[in-house]
Length: 282
Image (tube, rainbow, N blue to C red; front, top):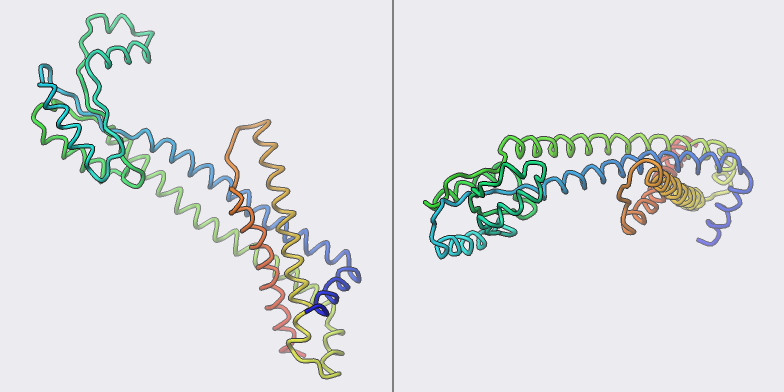
């Protein structure tokens, strides 16, 4: 193993330009994939923030017994899909309307706003089917005059999330495939540049494993360096966008480490495939 590492380092020194090209190609391939990942991450985060606002509001009939509404709130809170239930009294509803819609304060002078039960759902239960199901359960209470949850808005939001997920997976797989192809081709150039060396090693009786080892280590190191460089480029771009364009979220430490290790793995696999093909021809 030590010999393989030394040979890999020696290969870097023998062909610094080709090695730099390989590392740069890997870096920019992973950089493009990383930028797409950031866009997908922030789009998903934005949609999740919007989904948190999904709520079902049941308006309580005037003169309803407070004990009945309190019992209903307790029952609804026990639903497995429900995250929270809030009882808004008539006074609270009026105060909130005046606070949030101050420009229309004159409209609320009469002080006629119904009490309501506001229901928020847990993550994973904010799709149209679950929202409609909870709304249907609220209709059971005879003191509920009306139920509002923005059905059309909820359906559009769910449709947008579904489309975004499908497009994200498709583009992500495409970017990953292109990165693997480009990286594999780059490493193959390095292998072909040392084809004479491989033939000589074969002639003196070197085994395939002995020949392959330095190339695998070299591919791993190139992928690792490319992954680190891609991470630096991605972070730099993120900081620039955050400072001059818009604030966004960045990958957590685990995902960043996986990205670097992914580059190393791609380099390793690319070297293995390229060397394997060449060895079959020699």
